[in-house]
Image 1 (cartoon, rainbow, N blue to C red):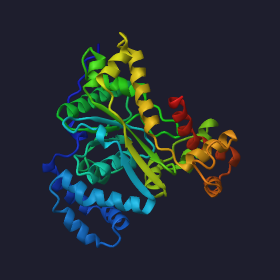
Image 2 (image 1 turned 90 degrees about the horizontal axis):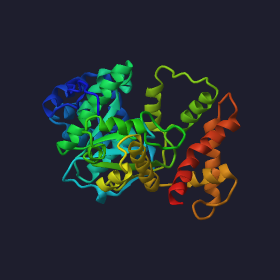
Image 3 (image 1 turned 180 degrees about the vertical axis):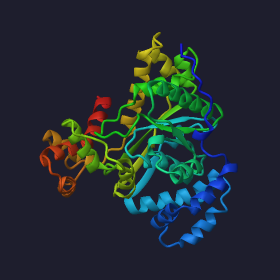
Image 4 (image 1 turned 60 degrees about the vertical axis):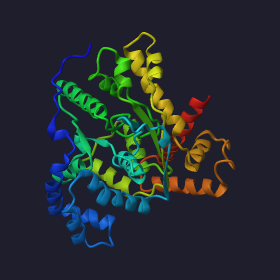
Length: 383
């Protein structure tokens, strides 16, 4: 039975209601960061014109349509070769959903789901964002106008329990009200290319449900999706972090999250694909319990989400090349990549190790792991 915890809705965590958006627009327009963002995303439009347009925005949906969507389209135009989506037929828009995905980029993973929905003239979802990433009032205002729900990070063990209950209650309330919300499958990005759903996250989802855990999870209408980047977001930064962690030398630097956000947005990512998976069916979840409503069920649900994501994950030549180089084979040569692609990707990985004052060969191997692991995961579920 779940512990009774004060999980009353926290207004300071919620996305803005439409009535609060005009005042937030005034604050955004007055902040110099808005000008910087506008010049980056819309270099051909005078900043004054963009500010004037924002001062007439009256709702979150309008903000997404007139500013967020064009900004995301411009970012993609500058930093990727294509963005495609599949699996829309799996979504039943007569009810709300909990979207859950792999987590490769701090900002783009959830944002690209919104863009995919906007492109199809469909309702967007709330997106979750850790409080540790909200570095200024501007970021908070911008996020809350963009349907961001703030997840509280840090604090004592008691804070962690209370915050988990608050988040669980909010997610259930959103879905029960017929709306949708996105959360990543884990706290923090996948750094090594190995996407795994955190069992603790599944446990958190049950905190707001009843004693029938399988039923409480089914009520959330969980829809996994896989987002795949041809060139891994922040690959060189992730590889360096993993290298330092192996040696116990890693210490998070001030401003590191912001650097990862900016790098992820600006770095060339090649092709990007978002594939929506079939939702978790109540009978699947019930079957996983097999009379055990405890950890076995939570592990089973996490594994089921993993399987959906592995199956839907789109592999690119970069992944196949890394797999063949890692294992010293030519398994995918010809069928999945050409010799010139093999050479070009090898050169790219070498560039990622330039300026590194440690063991560059080891760092190169870590980069291969990042790209090869999705192939290994897909092979495992197809076996």
